[in-house]
Length: 201
Image 1 (cartoon, rainbow, N blue to C red):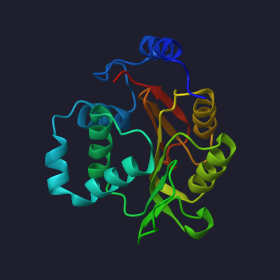
Image 2: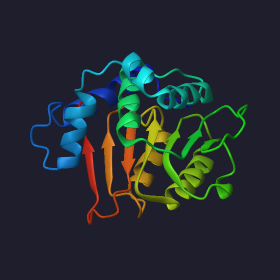
Image 3: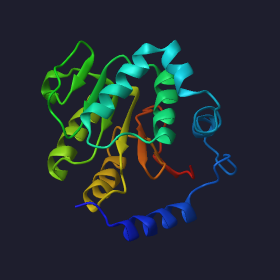
Image 4: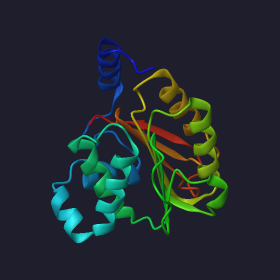
């Protein structure tokens, strides 16, 4: 069950209080600093990205169609910039709805066992917590060093927070970024120690 509005507001205040500066001050990871500078604080418009990279629009449309809630413009542009920058070829989208056919290199609520490798996965809320964790863990197991995952609405309810905290500890994950509405997990297997960042956005 989703948190009530007052509880979500308190969660946001807590996030805002502990989050790192939105300009990257005090961030010692060059990779995370680049994300803050070139993704979170970039000026590139969504229409410009979708015009240059039709594949980005296709992935965004699929993500929105798979869930019951549309992405906010603020989150949509961040995902678009990340997709344009990291250019994933094999994509998996796990959402609440299941009316999609599997396309080449685009896996929509498909059987995880049929997927050999994933560059990027988007996991939305609304599923049973145990099933979602099982699917997410199976996907991350198959991810290579440059692969990444986005969890949507990570603070929407207790199940999503539990899933987010559990997946951050996965042995294939080395870096996590909490932007309150979404959480981003990076494999980056060359990085020896896990690092977890909460960034104001």
